Amino acid sequence: MITKSSLKIGIIGAGKVGSALAQSLRMSGYQVSGIASHTSDSASKLAILVGANVQSLDQITLQCNLIFIATNDDSVTQVVQNAKWNSNHMVVHMSGSLSLEVLNDAKNMGSSIASLHPIQTFVGQDSSFVDVYFGLDTSSEILRDLLKNIVSELGGKVIDVSSADRALYHASAVMSCGYITAVLNDAVSTWVSANLDYEDGMQALVRLATSTIRNIEKIGFSESLTGPIKRNDKTSVKKHISTLQARSPHLLDVYCSVGKRMVSLVYKDRPDENHEWAQLFNLNSERKI
Image 1 (cartoon, rainbow, N blue to C red):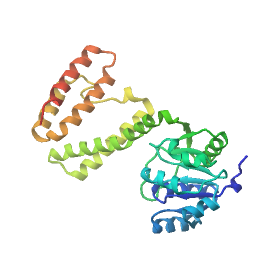
Image 2: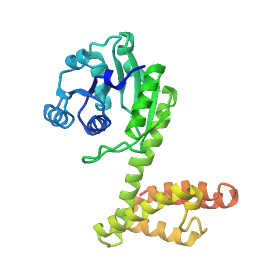
Image 3: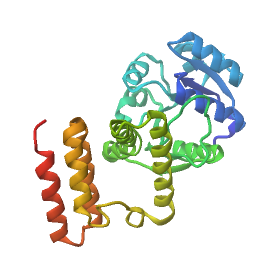
Image 4: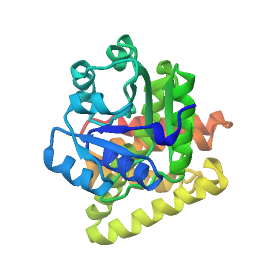
């Protein structure tokens, strides 16, 4: 069994994820020994925060046995290819989109490998992993148990995600974060097109979206659906579409696309209504601007 005291942890990458991980590990009583980053200033700041040393890649692989690669996706392959791995290493990348294959060079040199991806966005100084889910993939039972214990101590939860399912898993996370941001941005743009204040729109619509998310958590998707589509109010939606065509035509496509997805939720058991709504949205979304 691997004990906490026997771990010497190295973190490669001192960006948002690497910084959050290092600080959370330190607060949970783990020894973070080394920080490596292509940006020396960020590595130095993080090392001071967690009582670690700024190290080169060679130094980290020489002195650490559990190494997290928290760089951007494009840099993971370069890190793996340039490091001197051996059978004493446990190598973990934290990318959501990359499979275990990116760590094959480390595996071929005898290292145990895993991917551990926090399903979370990090802004500012936020370093908490409490209630955060982590997608885990590894063929090493020892490393699996170790990472599950670490995540548990950080306050998070682990789900197993195979390499074959990785792309769909990551797509779901992107849709739940970046795509929602894009839709909200378009909603605020629509608000501004109505000659209303941008800051008021930010406050009002983000608050509305937040309350919707809370409703989904409490009562599920179907019961949280509201608005004209839920009420079968085609007149209001036709007004939305005609006004968007006239005043904000660049937002018509997203309005109709998301509307069709909502129709599929509301009328999934009523094919006639589903068809009528789909015709309404298809007719207008196909108009070229």
